[in-house]
Length: 153
Image (cartoon, rainbow, N blue to C red; front, side, top):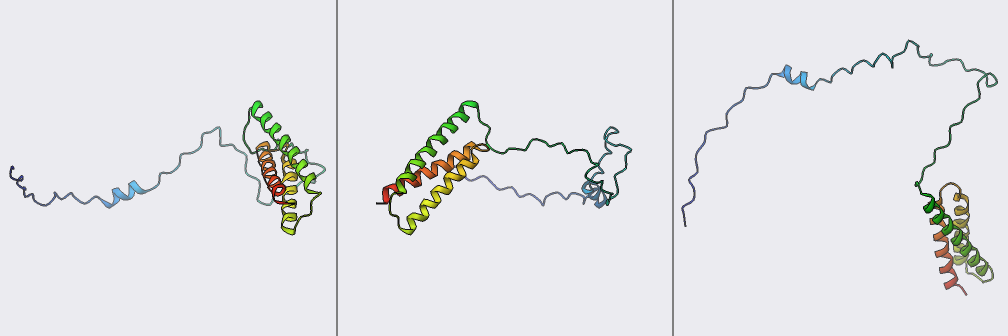
């Protein structure tokens, strides 16, 4: 076995001169933002904070921009699949609700029935705005209605 390598003694690390405080402060000072291009600056002064408001009859009619719609962007095929699934689920819920209407339900089951109806109504309301959410609500209503059918007599 070879002997371990000898440890070389080194002196203390070399001392660097302390940095000049002014140079550090200059490096940390935020830069002044540049002036905007001439095309952005305009000679129009901003109106005073409490500018007079015109009477509504004199104002030009407000141009309504189309409402922003949040939700998934779907292809036509995906949209049709969601629409078909929504229709099938809502029809299934209606059939289940008709069967449940003829059964005697305990209070907890009656509360579940109200929840199923609420989910179906919410799915109907969302049909035109958000097919994905409407389809999800209808799917939940189907699951709950089938479970209630299974457990009720």
